[in-house]
Image 1 (cartoon, one colour):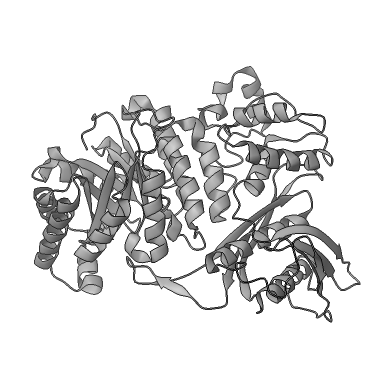
Image 2 (cartoon, rainbow, N blue to C red):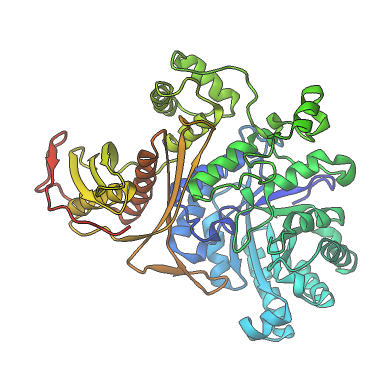
Length: 565
């Protein structure tokens, strides 16, 4: 790819490296929606996945290449996003990656091989000469399939710089067009990493014919600093993820790098193609789909990023925003509209407000669904805030297909009573199902009742382990909307093997729910996660023998059993 040297390409790996975060697994439809939003954001290259990892990964990458690859709407440069697939340095992986991305008008094969002595000795069990030969064969083969080839020397941060020069020179001769330098374990410091990038550019034969890239991890909290040091020393592609998600402590956060470049142009003297007003929306979407809650003090996108509580700060802000604010919230897509919404607000005002918040591409059915939830909340709150609307959008729009729908919940609990829950749901056949259960608390009782209903319908118990449960108020006040995020792991022991690390990856499903009632929010989150499990297993599509006809109500009655929390 030939680019202007003053443009830094944004290579987003949220759907590949980001999804390797524990519990951040996504289904195909969620990956497609995130990819569409990354295109609107202006990302230059989207690493859509690791196609050899599983049939599901391959299908997700293939569909992203076919459906998102051609999109150009709203993009600054008018060109579609490059769709990349990751592959180990062998022909089977590379061919699989190419088959997945080839439908995209602009596609890339990204292949890698470790170059540090510790990886060569203990993981690959090859010597340096064998490493060089494998790189040559892999890049040469990849170049026979497409013209856009990226090569990464894994663990470059701990590799011998002179050996890197040798490996990278051979990769260029074999046909690589982008060379990516990863600090795979987050070991280097900004001075070290910046020096390494400059050294490689100055000493690698053919360095001027390729784009130099950096990929940093955050194990020491230096991912963004190292990435920016790479840019200052000649890198013109940065590999990042939304919200900085990724393995262990995560990756470089896209929003931090982009806003650093935009806020300090005199320091970096480069530009990028990202539409910064889409940052907040993209961040919220990824957080909701992955179930990874954004810490309040997270730079750029955290809830406190533009909050000012100290009196001296507030006084300065009232006089001039530049006293304590280096960027404006609307620059990253946070709404500053003074329009107040309440129970008397109509659909048109609601739609206008959604547009002001950046949700200008929702279809009519999505707006109607969000408006219905808005009216319900407005009946309980005097004023509905932007944070409330964000929670509504997440709960109505960013949800899996509703195989089961929550209809009604009633709980009874107290410090001298056994928590009891009665739940009514609409099944995949359109019939109404009811059941009740006891639990260690009201939320546990609701979850057990849901399990009993679905388990009876499916003909087997629904066993899973709750691995994470968090609940947060999105605004201040006793009438605040609560957002619940959970993760569950099925008890079937199923797992896949990460081909990059050869470690087992146990499938975890996240769920999100929002309501002014924390029990209802918790139930919505649990049902969201269960719907993901059932959708993946293809449940709800069996024959209808013995089931109620559409609209009929069926009540299942059992002896209530106390279940541990």
